[in-house]
Image 1 (tube, rainbow, N blue to C red):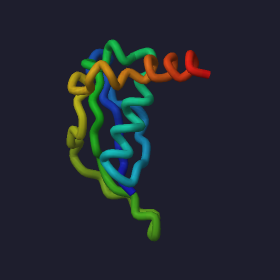
Image 2 (cartoon, rainbow, N blue to C red):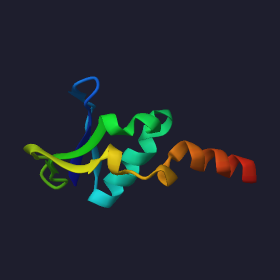
Image 3 (cartoon, rainbow, N blue to C red):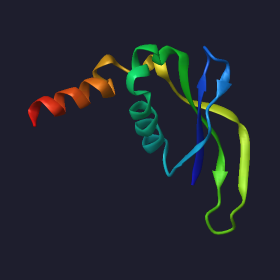
Length: 90
């Protein structure tokens, strides 16, 4: 399983790591987690930082590798708009 973290460049720190099986799953989780911070997505980036072996429990770290820059996320993927649209339909 892969280990990811989000870098907040405005605050100059990495957020606590999380786990995902694929880069696409991690991207989806990252975009969804932006919530009300979506307008400031340029301040955030998703990074792969290692692997967790589920059989041995061993964690292997790597130098952070950027998987997705927040600025590259299109406006149409704003999770707050999606949530509001879903609420209006129900």
